[in-house]
Image (tube, rainbow, N blue to C red; front, side, top):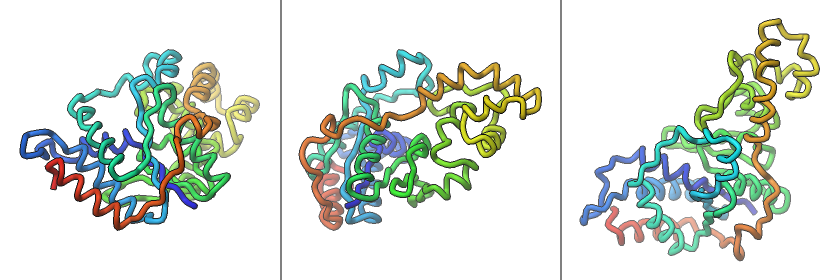
Length: 278
């Protein structure tokens, strides 16, 4: 029994900035994010028609704990109110199609997705996470695959992809980001440590602990940079690592329904037409 977990806000951002703002209803309501969101959902349902679907949205309060730890977290993101005005339409259509979704006030969407993916893959079967956020690389496994939308297609980011793209294993991704930082989330990395240095170091010494236990094996210039950034790396490790132990009962009420792909296609078209999107 497989499941596709959709990173709702990732879909929302991609749709809003990928579809022209001119996409409006006859009454002038901007619906480009709505149209793009369901275009992607229709595509993913078509490619994985037997999977259950669960959509996870971020809330305004769900990242507060992380913001308190790092006030710069995601501070580089511009909030566009025109985008979020369209979110109620999206949630309404999901409800009409009987597709479960959650927006939890206490937890960040990433942690919900990571927890559900971990629990589901151990109990029921394969998990596909539909998101362009590389943060999910850290939980990729033999049963968890990240699906990234690239040029209109969904690319399977499995263990082999991670190795070819980053030169590391999924288990090393947190340590990798902890050294180089993450511009997307406004997380600073160690000055002078880039992707190649980080991946090479992890290939030789497995993890951060191994790297610092063998610090004298590095050239003096690299030693100095790593030692100067040790505290930052340790903080980043705790900050970047997703929670995987949240109870499903915290965010899933009832049973996830099976998905009838043909019915989903029909319903999406109908509901979009009902709000003036064709």
